[in-house]
Length: 235
Image (spheres, rainbow, N blue to C red):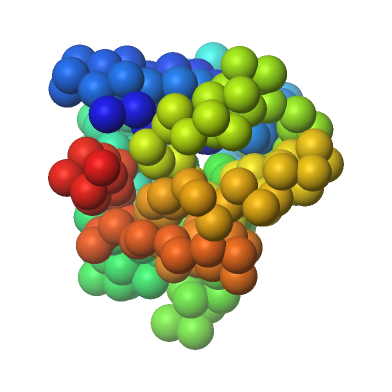
């Protein structure tokens, strides 16, 4: 079984290694590159907690000069993987919504009905956490700490394997990764390959750009565990 991982590094390598440990082959072709843009200082005045929707945030905050102040705050994470990353970065009070942005908004409303939260996040992100919380009368201030930009090509060896039908499935973790994957194939005049490739998406939103061109299979739950279970049991 051979799967292509398209998420940014270093997550791409981590997922590929996980697939290899499960006895399958994994190839890496990150469709997005990441750049850290965290401010030199966060305004923590009145902040009573952190909202986190990406495990990448953990590594960024761990290197920040205000890490001690940040670690003193309760953390509300979108899922178990993000929660585990925050705990590994030294955050002691971490709760997981084990779901999506709507589930996270519900968790915060239940646990933190007063004060306001700092939301270190990506420039482009799925969902509207701050809007969902505002509708519940809660304040959440998004602060961009990283951005991802699409790459304009994939490794030649990976493209050759796709053309030869030597990859059983492609893992798509976000809408932007899906858009970038499609754009790269179109650039090299290989968009027709999509009809021959099995696409596994972590959510309907992630797979939507590719669904116009081919059948996209979606994980039962928006988590890597569910995505890998789907792909490994399908190929």
